[in-house]
Length: 63
Image (cartoon, rainbow, N blue to C red):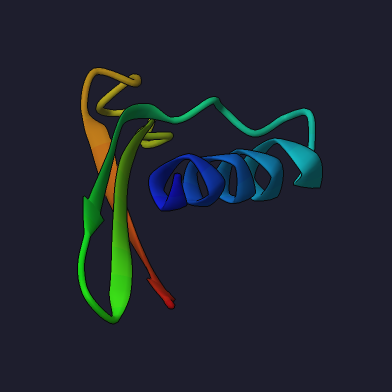
C-alpha cells in the first residue's frame, strides 16, 4: 500500500509540473524502514547523444 501511495505521489509530481516533461521510464521503488528510494530514467537532451542515452534520477522520500 505504501509503495502504491509513493508511486501515485511521484507520478503526480512528475506529470503535474509541465506537459513538456518526458514521462519517466524504468521507474523503480525501493522500500525501506525509514525511507523510500525512487529511481527513474529520462532521455538525455544532449544533441550529440540525440536521446540515445538515458539519465538516471533519484528521489528519497522519508516516511
